Image (cartoon, rainbow over all chains, first blue to last red; front, side, top):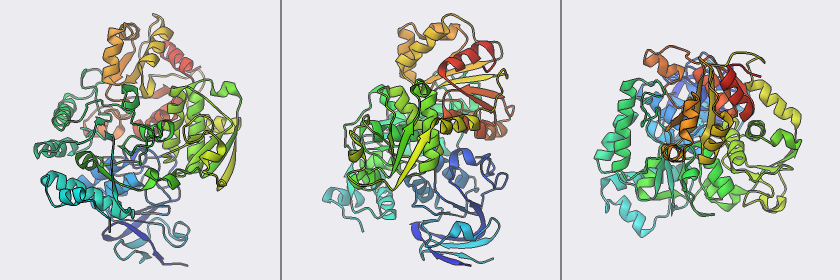
Length: 136
Length: 420
């Protein structure tokens, strides 16, 4: 089983935290509650879990361009994810939010990241070094 | 590293002051994140208005405006969390409304046109075909790109800085090669299913979920109606993050299928049938026939004057049922025009509300906002709408049931309080 992936850096920084792994696409507007950072979308298997301080992993962004504002607001309240990892190329909108919010953001892992990890495992994301690693 | 012109380098060196220096620095960071080679001048900006429901957002804007932030390109604003000209109409708490009003003053001082709408195209902000722009609001982004051929990526919080320095990185959908259709959707759908806006919304919702962030080429269906193209785009950008679509024979970069594919082959070919539309309706029609409706929303995305006129004619002097809130959403200038044209009065005499600047999802009605401001949660039980975008976000953010149907069905629900 793969434990280390090469990724493309979008926004600088590093983090180590439990992962929230969403198999499909994710919209910061509509999929997460603004005041408590809990996933609320009916279609998300992680519904009820908080993304605050977690490494949020999903396939790709979807939906409203208000998503980056939600990310920034979560960051102002100390509820932002520790890092964001997307399998597909980064969304311009989300990248803008992550730059301003200072959330490390990487994309395009060189293997099947979504198939290899589960919610609750600990990931280390190093945007500057271009890696994502399972550490626990 | 990005190649800067003398003008851009001077801005970065502080020739135009610290506010512009900071702005171009952010825009360069964004370009470097995506490997852009250089910046381009933008013709138009649609700006994400700071909403009072987002903690600290308005305060930060006001500080920025005081620091002397001024936009250099024609700039309009997206929606707010309340109706500022009629702060009592939506039930938004007074504290939120007065905070939101501070944003309006700040926008004006920055030279931003206070349109507060998701459809700035209705107000004539229509930059030329092929121009480079930067917009927020997913339904506007996709309309400008696809229907007007005015190029933009999915803008975000850095839109402010692009408006202030007039620059954006040359990348993404500003480049010809990114505008090539990737997925071909061959549609075989009876005309009557696409005779109303909700049909186009269902089609967009289905295709968006399949195509994700790629570029769909939609073939086999046609329309010349702007409201249908807006409905299609809004739904594509809800279930997916579609930034550009091509509708063969209709949109300007898709005169033919070959043109939409830029002479290449599609990476995927997908058949779309009536059954796919049925599945979309099943997902978002969670009210039984005959079930109670307590909220009806029309105007997602915001209506223009012609659409308000149709609402007035359809209501035809009848009354909205007791206990039903019926919101018809538009922008403030169009509402003023409707008042002058004698359209506003008949709609509101019927008991419906013409709401400007906002909509149910962007307003205070969200569960999270209700909790923060001690409002009843949830305060909507079942919403009828003809827009999959409205249904998706109200189901998850307001937490209500949704009924998805045609314009006539929505008006009937407003008049009877029942879904038929």
